[in-house]
Length: 213
Ligand SMILES: C[S@@+](CC[C@H](N)C(=O)[O-])C[C@H]1O[C@@H](n2cnc3c(N)ncnc32)[C@H](O)[C@@H]1O
Image 1 (cartoon, rainbow, N blue to C red):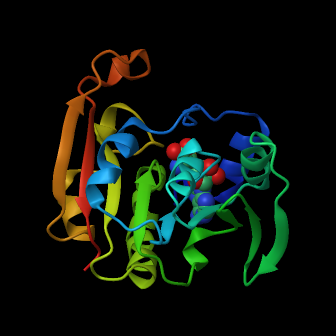
Image 2: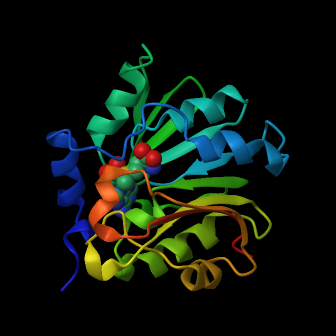
C-alpha cells in the first residue's frame, strides 16, 4: 500500500487547513549561503520542484533567473502571488495551469508529468516530501528535465525513520548518491535545538551540490 503522502489529496488537505509547517516565510538559509557559489549566469533557468509558496522563488527571480516552480496546490500558487501584491496571468500549459508574474511561473499540477529543459534546480523539501515509492520516478523526471551538468542544490534530512513517519522523510546519503552520482556534501548539521524533532533523536540536515549526469 502506498503512503498517504503519495496522494495529491494529502497535500490539498494540508493547504486547505493551513497545515504548512514546512513553509519558512523567508528565503532558505542554505539557498542564501550556497546558491551564489554555483556561479550561474542570471539567464540560467531555475526549476523549483514541489515549490509550495516558498520565498525562495522570489529570491531566485530577484537574482535575474527565470524561475519555474511546480506545485499541486492552487492555494499555494494563489498565496505566493497575493503575498507579493502581484496579479498573475493564469493560462493552461499542457497538463498544468501556469501562473506567471514577476519572473516566476508556477506550474500548478503533478510534478511527475513535467517536460522541458532547465539549467539548474533548487530542491528544498521536495525529494524529502515524497515517500520512498515515488522518489525513483522523481529522479527520472529530473533527469529528463535537467542537462547532465546542470547544478542541483539539494537539502535532505537524515534520521531514524522507525521513530517517526514522514513527511519529511529521511533520505540517506546512499540514496542521494544513487540519484545524483558524485554528489558533493556542502554542509551537515544536527538539529539538536529543534523541539519538533525531540522524540526522534539525532536528526541531520544535509546540503548537497549535485548533478543528474
Ligand atoms: C514539504 S512542501 C515544501 C514546499 C516548498 N518546497 C518549501 O520549501 O516551502 C511539499 C510541497 O509539494 C507539493 N507537492 C506534493 N506532491 C506534489 C507533486 N506530485 N507535484 C507537485 N507538487 C507536489 C505539496 O503541495 C507541498 O506544497
